[in-house]
Amino acid sequence: MAHTGRRSHRNRNRPGGHRKPRTQQPTTRQRTRSRQTTRRALRREVPSTVALLADERDFAAMRHYASFAFDDHGAYLREMEGLLKALAAKGVHTTVALFDPVAYEEFCADTRLDPDTAASRTRYTAELAAGGGTVTYEGQPIARLVPRLIGVAEEQATWEYATALLSRAGHHGECRDDTTARAAFDRAGAALRAVVEAVGPGVHHLVCSVPADGTSLVAVLHADAREAGPPKLAEPSGLVFRTVLACGFALRSPGGLVLRTIVADSPETVRGWALQDGWLRPLSEAEVFTAYCTDAETGEPIPPEHGVEYQAGIPLSRPE
Image (tube, rainbow, N blue to C red; front, side, top):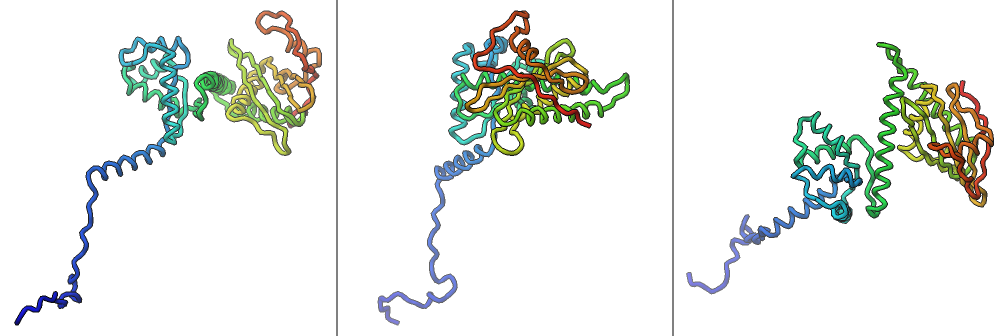
């Protein structure tokens, strides 16, 4: 048969008669970029914790480890701030904890880790994150972050110590009675609510001081009662405050509670109560003035604050 020069159409309707277009395979560079993009996305899903040597003496204590790479505290803080900013720029949720060299040595001794390794410092940082006492990094300058971090660490230490004292309050020889601690904690919560409700609307700053076991436990709490409804208490400061106050009730300690109230277009007021017989006894105006205008360490008088009114504490109904 003569060849006409026309392309045959016989195979067009057969299975496989049309040639499939060739699929272009990704290059090695494209695959690498894809993996990097995926890893960056995953990195944003993993939170980070940075342990900071905020105190220069603590920084100096770490310098005797050969694996610790820094020799200047100021440069160290600048590098840490740069690291925090870089993590934030990548969308990584980052918390900051206070690195304590003494606690770190104890941790390494208990876990039988070599303290002179970066891996051991990382393990310790993870323990700090799990135990609480961290501050979320939100872009604040290191100069503002450090004081806040120290305050949170002190608050955490106060809560741990007060919790231990409160737990021991129910021990009688070899017998343990947890109801004493629970009852004191419940009573402390009731007392806190009664105080804030009694003074009314405003922004309240409360300080509770309880001498216990040769030291003084101090807890600070802010309560916002400017809007209708229950006052907004800052947590975890509220938990620390209730625990310290509960210690005072359980141990029958002669502690005290002072409250400063700020209301728009009104003078600031200061009131006070003394811990007595498992409840709060209101102080007189003269007692509040004396307590606030006397140096706690020297006993010397302190001039009263300008624009502050010192008022008697409000009587509070005891719970049933």
